Image 1 (cartoon, rainbow, N blue to C red):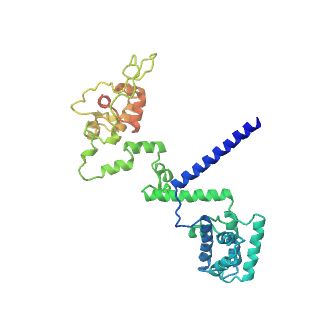
Image 2: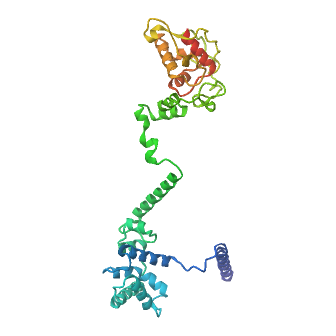
Image 3: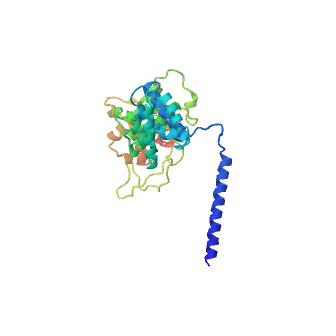
Length: 373
């Protein structure tokens, strides 16, 4: 019985070993190593320690800090030489000191070697990235200036270093966005808040910007002295801008209203909206549309300007909005009653007066007739 289990375990071990060998062979085939280059991570760390020395002293170290630099570089020098049992270990260390810390004498070099060997016996030879940064007193600015990647800044915990890396990545991403033509976040509308200067809410600002009815957009269109371009005209009316037009078609299909009088519903009737877009398009008067003299405070009739009389659908002009509100106030009618007179729902009329959406051609014709009544 035990022989069977031993044979099964041996077969499992053989299968795992064969699978590991197959994976190693596949990795070797996919990513062949460049045998002409012997550059490793240990050599990179030793090179960065030399960069710190050269960056601080503009060449070899000529101060008393040479012993500190040697203690920091010794683990990687020993590895490059072949270990503590190598015959030419002292020669490798002396050659490095002659090039990097020439003021260090042979006694100090041997003392550092003895200390490193003692740490190796306690399995404490290698410095971590943080310990190496603390030993060299590497600052953040110095690390970025010398492009150090394998040594952390001094006195930085793991959490602080992670936050530091995120901040650096964010700066790089911001630089890439600006290089591609994006607007910096400091210059965005969310930071500048242009709607505060216009005394309106954020949502109203973006709605009017999309509809093209902001004061700056209207002023730009009014101050253009060149002839209008036909690409901004809608093919249906040939008068209004595309941004000020809404798509044709009914917005919803509610039930028809009952008992609609001259000023709205009769008492007791249920309030239901008339389907928008189903208003009967009545012809405008030949003599034009006039406003009541009480609306403007004058003693005689005044004719509405050509912008209002030429309205044929879309977003309402400012003059027409003022005329509708004045007529509603003088005739003492609710917005619900005015909406039913022109054949639209109250929310649709409210959105049209706010400049969010436009009116259909039939509702626009009925609105002009209601103003002239």
